[in-house]
Length: 293
Image (cartoon, rainbow, N blue to C red; front, side):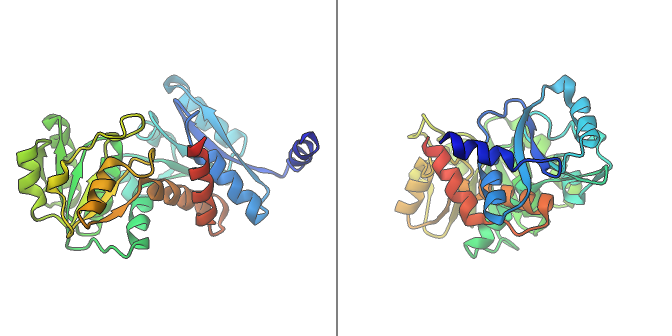
């Protein structure tokens, strides 16, 4: 065991490219296990590390990225919006969203992207789900809901938002309408409103943490409101099979797990960092194994 560890460490050199994650906290992240497994399988001289960065040290962390020639960084809470002013360029969709979760360093020039949006869309594409001209109901109005809403509206999807806080839902709706010049309806997160909204919806997305372990029997949408004509997407990935997804399957709906979005957003970032096609299957396998621990 000791011999294997020493051999592994010996492969890191002055030529090794460094990537990583900045956020507060970062200890829970699945990204290191996914990225490092992918580097190993493809034989790439890269390493991925988590960096715990407090709000007041964000600008120094980005300066450090340049100074140390760190090839790529993923960005998580609470830095996705506040990191933008420190970058040289931002992808147009990420700029519209006002949120960056991936930074690529190209010779000292830093470009920001949002792979959450692309990871969500790839999860749908893998299942053969088209969103153009469809109607989607998003439960939640936080950061993940924001990424998903922008991604869907970019593809021509009619979006409606259900949220406990009407003020937060209205703020997101205003930003979406300003960016796309299309109407966005908001509804309270109540059974009667959900029933009325979901009667004409093709895609239902839970973008909240409702149903996350240990509250595995909680669901944001009553089971009787689900039907076989829906595609149900739950961003929660722990547990893999949430109450909402179990209820959706019982109703005959197609269901998509949150682990798919987690893996695909990581795979998109991996490809931007390295220029190589990501081994998505391996990354998913490692993420699921890590969750089991």
